[in-house]
Amino acid sequence: MHENKAFPSGSPPEYTAVTTNAPAAARSKWNPLGWPLWGKLLGVALVIGIIVGIIVGAVVGTKKHAYPNYSRLVYSIEDRYEGEEFFDNFDYFHDYDPAQGFVHYVPQATANSSQYNLTYATSTSAVLKVDTTDQNANTGRYSVRIVSKKQYHTGLFVFDVIHSPYGCSTWPALWLADPTYWPENGEIDVVEAVEQGNTGAQSTLHTKKGCTMDVKREQYGGVLANNCWNGTDDNAGCGVQGAPETYGEALNKNGGGIFAMELRDAGIRVWFFNRTNTPGDIASGNDSSPDPTTWGMPLADFPSTDCDISSHFRNQSIIANIDLCGSWAGSTGVYSEQYGCPGTCEEYVTSNATAFSEAYWEWADFRVYSAAS
Image (cartoon, rainbow, N blue to C red; front, side):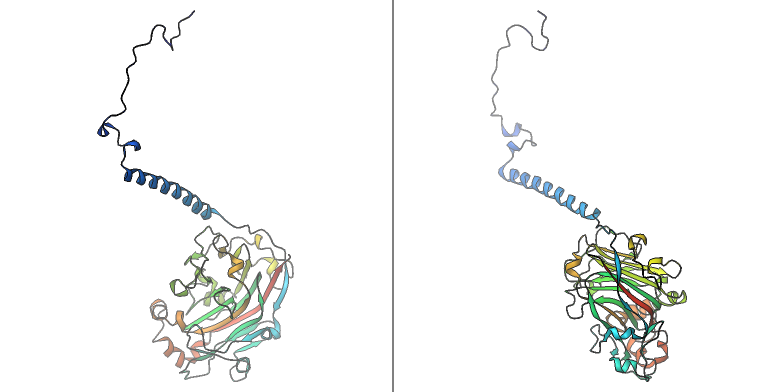
């Protein structure tokens, strides 16, 4: 029989008992059995903290890389706002300005009167402007704010902008909101700017609490803020900044452009197209089904990852206005320091009627498309 080298033959050596009652000082400090009670509790808490941290980190990491499915929806035309009846689709807001502007929003009869002619439409375009006749508007200058009679929960909205308003003290916007329940039902600023507007248009969401955008986004616009809740940063919202050619004199010199906004459960996206790169499926006169999945990266992307779109945005009316001064355009930091406008905003509005010659919107049309269910 061969010798087993793993288990030598012969009698085993004499067994000697080893005591386990070694002094505490002789035990390793890394051995929890030798720790005092407070140390054991601290160790357990540390282990639990590490495990929780790993789980939270995994959840946060997953959310950072999550992204909704913007798969194609089949859209068809639902409403057209165009032609001489353009303004018949809107109510004229004529109450005190909620944004504290130095402005009088006038009713339709005043806006359409031959004395002011602040809104008018032809077969090819619609115009909304600021008054340029009053040489002493010491309680605020006349302007217009229109609100669509119809409201929408979802859809694809296409706005063909021929001319955008600009100039010191102006605060124009083309946006959607529920005037009755704000901010509960949300606000979508498709196009917004102040003063000269030479830094480009902003697209912004304003919501109730619980809508943030510190997540993966696919857009080329610059992020201004990530918390959409109106209770943060003086209701700055979660904005995205467009390039200079998206607004003001630069946009107008290029013949305007098209802004498109998609509102769906997966998220909200805004595109801008100049006259040379407008997709054929939303070009003027085209009644085909638009397909945003073929349009490339949007200017602004507000995904549903950390914002339940369907619960934050309901009953959206299309709104357009030109405010004057107010909480944004009238602030010293913006009016005089950022844009270099003269005097105070209110003084400028009061006595510079002819300075508002460029303070008007002109649109070819608005189109709203709905998706097949």
